[in-house]
Image 1 (cartoon, one colour):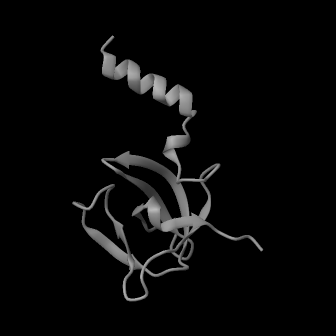
Image 2 (cartoon, helix red, strand yellow; image 1 turned 60 degrees about the horizontal axis):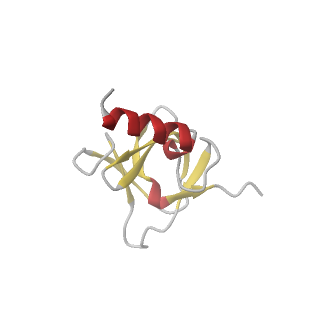
Length: 103
């Protein structure tokens, strides 16, 4: 078996799939956009990377459902849908989402 494949399999076993989720997340679920500057928006893209078309911009506080995440280069991208438009799906950088406060 190729060393690269063995290394990938070992990494998957060690992390238990945790690498597929946003940092600090225990499981897919509800998150919100945060950390975007006031004069900007988080870009929801058609695929996991900056080379994909922008679907729309999301301001801080936008509620998202995370379905899955993947690493592309040095960035973790999460496939998400909007709370208020669940049929609309795209990808956002995991660096700009956090678990939603359920108070």
